[in-house]
Length: 520
Image 1 (cartoon, helix red, strand yellow):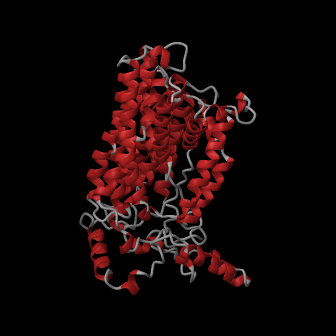
Image 2: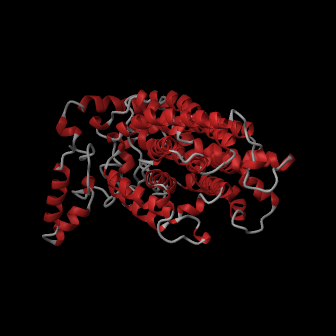
Image 3: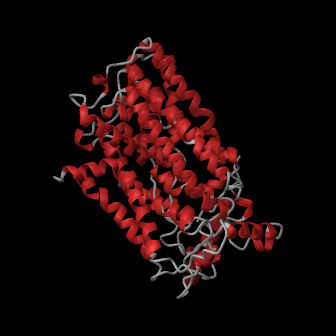
């Protein structure tokens, strides 16, 4: 039975905070800012204390083994957009391989310095709510299908799926109080449950179809299948859209890599265990949907085809595994207001904001889903490219981590009022190239060349931003880069310093209570 001690401690702190105005102001400030030492840091932005650095190489392998197989829905969406099964397979392999390589390079800095002062937002997935709805359909049968009034088609979803989303949200919300270093068990559970369920789905589909694949025309969301140049650009756009699926992880994998015990473990694990499980999972989705002759709502297709007790039980297990894949993909807004927002508060904020969004609109069609991923990627690509080039090429792995939290005028990393103008200009250039074409996805007439740039989305924005940043750093060298330092010399010194204080609890605990559940 879980301990209620954190809840009691939180209630006690809250009761004390309500006694006076000063007590409340001190309460709302994050633990790392309790003494108002600095407004740019808190217990989650500061380097992780040694006790929390507990992700070994096998933890990253298990993480991606589970997350990769959960991407089988991406393969079915690509087939629904107009590609054949073998074309969709190539698309998934290319996107997953590039994503794994980019994650490996972008995780190195966080794995060395155990710090990641970034901001990202990711919200509870509506697809998880759809799986909850499928589970309830398996339990309650036709009574679930006839519950309540019907939503009009303009809403883009059904009452059942909306209820499923609310239930999924309610289950996930309490887990926002846990930091990634306390959730290794969750990702291990995903790695155990997802691969067997995905392969079980494939076996069922092959048996039901007698290993016959559906024609491409029966699976796409269009009247005719594209050919010639249109098909070539559809393949390019699908690769870019698939990159958008992983673009958040590419830019924000440091959130997990900061807990790595060995920096080299974040390299080979991402290079190998991102593409292979993801590609295999995508292939399962591709072949499964081709066998069922239906590219979307595969689980509902199984129930429509075979409404029996064993089928309902099997679909319930499959939906549970798929919902588990969408569970625990948390978010944070820690770097926006570090004095008041730590990791858990940021996750609460993003989870609450998700109720005001309409994620079911994104999933209404395969084209809409891929268009969203493509648009998302053009904004995340430049961020990852600048982070990678800055660490690997410009700074050669050397960061004065203590100076990163100083806002004193003239401090090493203050730049111009806190802005690295080279990085700002590079990001703007990277986004600008495909942005006009991205606007065209909303129905605004744009030139054909702009639309083609949007098809290249993540790749062109990342390459543009990285190249411009390197060029600007050559023309306008950064004054805080010491080129006399050897490769990752400061990283080795930082590791040695942490080792020397690891056995001194009074020093190691100065960064705040980063280990465990922090309710507020």
